[in-house]
Amino acid sequence: MTAPLSMRKRSFIDLTGRISIVTGGMRGIGAAICAELASAGSAVAVLDIDLAGAKDWADSLVAEFGVKARGYVADISKNEEVIATVDAVARDFGGIDALVNNAGIQFVSPIAEFPDDAWQRVQAINLDGVFYAMKAVWPYLIKRGGGRIVNIASAHGLTASPFKAAYVAAKHGVVGMTKTAAIEGAQLNITVNAVCPGAVMTELVAGQAKDLVSSYGGGLTEEEALERAFLEHTPTHRFIDTEEVGQLCAFLCSHAARSITGAPIPIDGGWVAH
Image 1 (tube, one colour):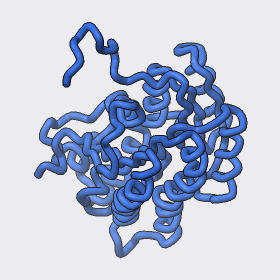
Image 2 (cartoon, rainbow, N blue to C red):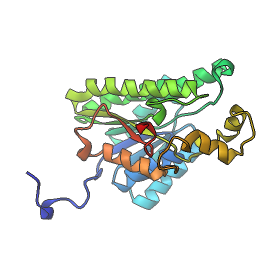
Image 3 (cartoon, helix red, strand yellow):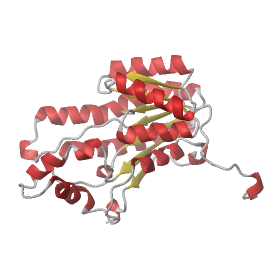
Image 4 (cartoon, helix red, strand yellow):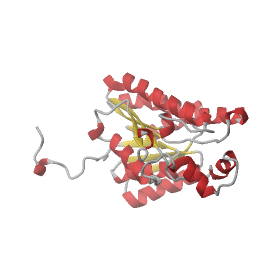
């Protein structure tokens, strides 16, 4: 039975008392995720390779939203660093309720010219790092009686584009790993979902412009190359705002999303609807 309007809470996203970790949390999509979690009342641990930047952003969250927030440094491609940092978060905050695996990198190159070290680095951060972080937080989620894991995959976890072999492979792996973890967590009150953004204008996207111009054989401006690579397949023909991704993540971390698990959720302007 649906509750009458007078009995409903004003907002169904209330993360008061929750403790959330966001990897790659100091800029771009990660920063937006941190802000949306904090605005909903969650304490936030900002993990990044840049400790000073993570601390500065955490301080900004405290000032703006009045929640507890701290910055931490970790290279998520190194399992021992991930374990140590997650343990430190649990000690500092008293537990962990949610993990958003956002950290990621990109490298653009035709397969025949794709450097081996670039392939390995993309896999280490975009795929291995997601596994390490999930594994590290899992016991803490169990101690809290359940929790939420949101893995930032990509529309490229559901489809493909040229010149992005390592990224596409890693993001497809994240989607598959998400489904496995969701099945394992189902009886533990742990939900695991994959958010699959399309064309979001971040530093990661803007930084591909020069390589894309080269990959397309020249003759395009950087803006034209970005539009060809990202918006040509987007029916809405606009870049997605980072806040949109953050809001979806906050929802998935809330009680309202308790029955959503194992889902790769596109937020891509219709890209994968083709």
